[in-house]
Amino acid sequence: MFSLVRENIRIAVNSIKSQLLRTILTVLIIAIGITALVGILSAISALENTISGDFSSMGSNTFNIQREEFAIQRHGGGRIQKQNPIISYADANDFINAYQFPLSQVSLSFTGTRSAEIKYESEKTDPDVLILGANENFIQNSGLKINQGREFTVFDVDNNNNVCVIANDIVEEFFKDLNPINKTISIRGHKFKVIGTLESKKTGFNSSEDNRIIIPIKLARSIFTNPNINYNLSIKVDKKELLDNAKDEAIYTFRNVRKLKPIEKNNFAIESSEDLANRVASMTKYLYMAAWVISIITIFGSSIALMNIMLVTVSERTREIGVRKALGAKRKTISTQFFIETIIVGQMGGVLGIILGLLIGFAVSSAAGFNFTTPWKAMFTAVAISFIVALISGLMPAIKASKLDPIESLRYE
Image (cartoon, rainbow, N blue to C red):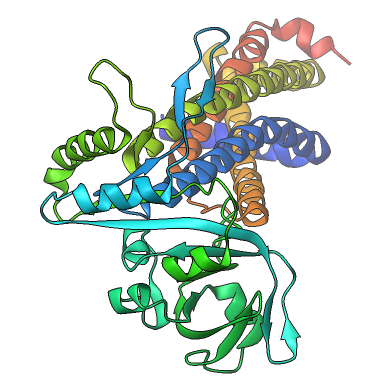
């Protein structure tokens, strides 16, 4: 039994070697479908990991009070953004003074400008630096980490100290070979001493993460006096099991700040990293579905092409089949030979498709700044699909080969 299988494998390999160009084209046909599957799924997986990672970086025990609120759109699907009144500085301060939930800390921040030009001695940046005004809890609540130096203290904020924490791009711009701590930079004519630097957080979606400067919020308010500034509140709870109670308390407190009646709906939004991650998962679900549809259509076309090529192979080897049958080969032996040949070609195409798919997924992830992870599920699925495609594609050619009449086959030229 094993010797027969080994002999069929040897014959199949020799046949593949003798028709090298056809084998290469057949392998490429299978590889195209598998490449589409693995490449698209790995790119989507990297996208999902990146977005989810960005949201979860602020911590599973942190939530935000913000202006924007997303609601499900009743007609046509999708989501629409519901605009609420801005969170003013007075609202934010009233909330901070009134919110007394134990084991929690509140951060307050706002965007001063996204187009600041920063100067250091005779050098200056492009006018595209993001300036944030924030209190002493902002860095911890946002999941940011200090690389060098320190973060703000209550003393820095309350006394309007001219200090700042800079991100990685600013360090690279001015202090590549220098220690930035205690150096003085200029923002809109105001001098600031660098007291800390942030660890890099560059991703495809947060290109401004590494190109920003954080300054004390009270001082920032005196520099950036734009009307209708919207402030962001973030609450971090020391224990995750207290998160739901902290949210309820925050909603109750902010409703009182907004003087909402019991029958009125909230005119603000509560968002946590878990909520955002779930929203991302629901959106990427449709991307996965689209990827599967595209990949299945491609693989279906590949299976038809493989079957057609194997049928041509049977026709070309009619005389060989007749000789083998005349020498005593059974129908099962003939069909097994073509099955093995098809499966070998299919698995070669599957392996090549996985390699190409991973390369495409990695290239897309690198270009977009996504967090690439090896898509094991897609790879195992690709192996299974390539085997099934080869099995189905080899079925009809194998049956046709096994049914050939040996006398007629010997006459075939």
